[in-house]
Image (cartoon, rainbow, N blue to C red; front, side, top):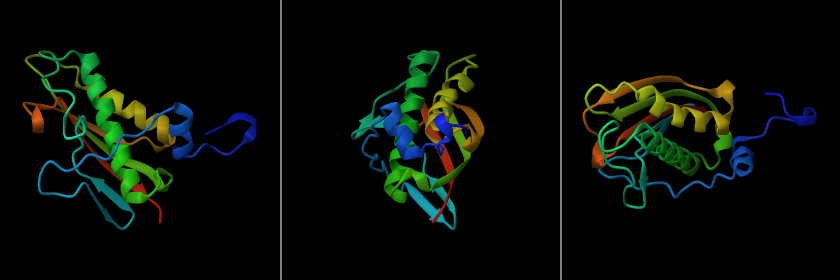
Length: 162
């Protein structure tokens, strides 16, 4: 990544500050599970929902109760929760060397085929924070329902350094 005046690329933590992004408190699990498991240099996160505090901020299906714009906002919030949990586990997002995989489940109704547009909001945020060179492969699912009635759930695998 080329930066102004030949300086080193901004770290993920620096980019958060530059973008004016303040991460939310990491969400509490909504069941009997842990939110992050690291094995070797891989960090696996449990499904992240668009939650704030102790509940869902967005509820409904894209194409019925929610439009694509609201679905994108939900995906963006879920991605912020991903970053918050990763930072809590690692101590700093600068330890992320690569986003390996992003799985996005989107609840839609009927003939809606806009799941990739919704998923793009999460991909765009991760790219802004980590840079395009660390972009993951991605899989997008259309599903019938998700926990808490939310429209989006993200699954992320990071490669991390010590």
